[in-house]
Image 1 (cartoon, rainbow, N blue to C red):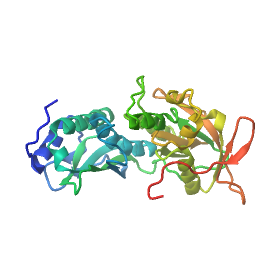
Image 2: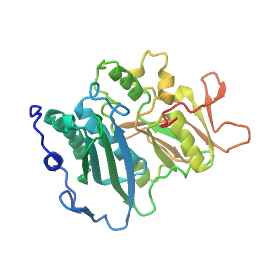
Image 3: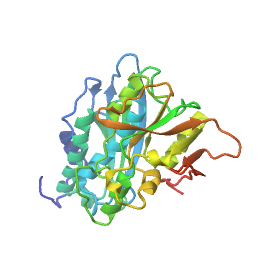
Image 4: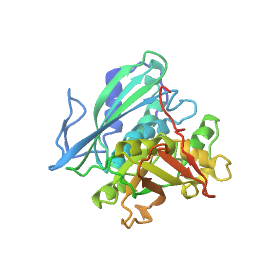
Length: 330
């Protein structure tokens, strides 16, 4: 990587650095990308466009002294790609806007690392960068906003609103690992092993695409704020209630031997796994694209004076599942 420099570089040099570092991913759908006032995109015939946007704020979503620049860049893109996965969509284009303090804009080592992490995931997910914006931050903190476009065949996007009473509830992968790694990261510790669900989350694009293409899911969303917060969102959109079996929750290996493993799985957030429902008659595979699928509960009819989501313990005890995940401005 290039050495840090304190030489002022300016906005245009920064834009050129971004263009150069992300030029490895191309798409025939992008007729015109970085360099003009607007990008020109031609979506595939017969498709619909899905759009998502996410802020990443220093001090809220990452810290420069605890997160590597590669992790910051990876996470900038991963959060939005996970939203596309939840819709069963294929990435079409990304638009990245950065507000940087001068101290960071002149640190080529950090910026190159951040762009390297972004570009690596862009290559893995075939997500070309088609534009964005740059500005000087009003303070010493970095702010980033990413807009992602995806496409799905017309009328096939996975929604939160399709769950019906009797449907089975599933999650992909394992839960609680991101919260466990975040805790270690903020404490200045590095966890051993190859799994880094917080630092380098892996969006479940292939799973979402398969769920949509094979009509396996009736409703779907990603788990970004925690199962206890996100499952109620799905229930509310579908007009249903839910019961989950706590003993069936797939706990991440990073939570092994922790007394609060279940709490991390329920409320930790940032696992970026998919939460979806399926008809009870659907023969669900045990895994898709190497990612495990675990049934954790059942959709039920809403009833008066009953909780939206009920948690059932191994001994059969039933309790309301309170929302304990992340919520901004709360």
